[in-house]
Structures are given as C-alpha cells and as structure tokens.
Length: 280
Image 1 (cartoon, rainbow, N blue to C red):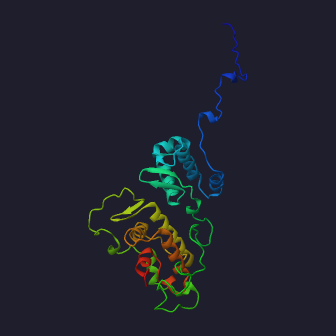
Image 2 (cartoon, rainbow, N blue to C red):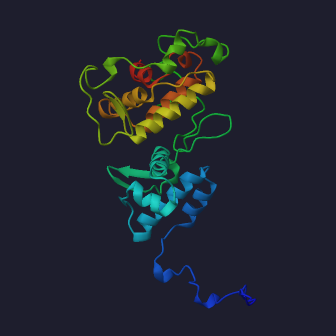
Image 3 (cartoon, rainbow, N blue to C red):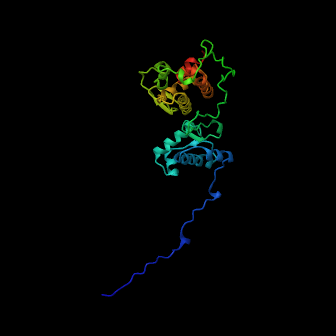
C-alpha cells in the first residue's frame, strides 16, 4: 500500500472568469426628478413599501411610461418578496396616494402635495393638500357659515368633555342601510375599482384613504375610539362624491373643522354624520 497525498488548491482562483455585474446606462435607465428622489427619501415608508415602490418605478419610468399594467408576480420577481406581500404593499402605497391606480394600471404620483403618509408619532393627522384654516369654515373662513352653527350655540369648555357616550357610537358605526347604494339583502357584486368592500358597501383607494384620515382625526379627540367599519366609511365617502358632488379635499377640510369645533366635534364623528349635517 502506497502513501499518496492529495494536493488541494486554496488559491484565489481565476476571478477574471467571474461575471462582472456593473450597472450601465446603456442597459436602460429611469428618469427621476431630484424633487421626487428627495420626497421618497424623506417619506416614512416601510422597507417592503419602499422595495415595491422602486419596482413600480422600474416598470413605469424604466420604460418611459407614466403608468402600466403591473402584476404582483412582476413586483415579486424584482423585490424578491412573496406575491401576497407585494400586493399588500402596493395597495398601501395606493392608499397613501404615492402610487396612482386606474383600473389595473399603476404608476408613481408626481404630485407630492397629494401624498397622504400616516404619522408614526402623536399629534394631529396630516394631509398636505388640506390648507390650515385655524378652525374656521373652509367655505367662507368664518365660524358661522355652513349652517352648522346657526341653530346651536357653540358649547364652551374642552372639546373632549362635550363628547357623550351616546355620541361615541358614531366612531364604530356600521352605517345604516340607507347609506348604501344597494339594498342590504342584495347579492353583492365585486366592484373592479374597490380597494375595500363588505357586502354592498365599497370604496376606491382614495375613498379609503380619506376614511382612514378621518378616523385619525377622530382619535385626536377620542384616543380610545374603536376602529370603525372602514368599508362603510369609504362607502359613505364614495356616495358623497358620486351623488352629492363633493370631493375628498372638501370632505376632509370640513371634517377637520367640525372636529375642532366645540359643539360639532360631538356630532360629526363619521362620514355618514358629515354627509347628514353638511347643509345644516
């Protein structure tokens, strides 16, 4: 039996044969304004949301398109995230107005003032396109317009003290059937534009964003408020848009004004009440 020795080569190897992965503009690029880059950098997004945002930028601006049909599987391939997580993050970005949606088309929203990013810390909720009006009416800048205070004098004292237990029911109201555009016992049809739907009650991504913003406003005067039925809230907001001719900005401006008023803060605590009291 002969003794043999096996020589193992632990050398550095031939790195020249390894493929180099270097980015090159000749392989394509996305035109992105410095303002958008700074806005994205300052946005308080989760890691998952940011990865999906970059993937959407790649699938749109990377092809010189403002919007395109982007599937969740395409996002998953780029982000290396599960398809389900990509869908969740995409819808979150739509609700924040960072991403626009038109049917099955998605694309970046360049209008930064329309972004609606929730705050992580305490304080009043922020929607950047709603002007500061110092608690005055958004229509005439005075506290006696909108007919909200014509019949009822404003109560004095702290806003929180004026909210009774009965009025707190509005926070988590399921919304009555009269707010719906279909009878409650009808078989509901899935709406293609719905970001949220429960039975016959539904709303778009923009309606849901406004509903979530309104609830954040409610929590500033009632921190213990229970989470409402957002499908019902979004449905009422949609009806105000489609039937009453309101827009999201005016709804949110008036809702914030009502929440800051000593009397109306105890009476307008949901989109349904806002719609009911709008002309009073």
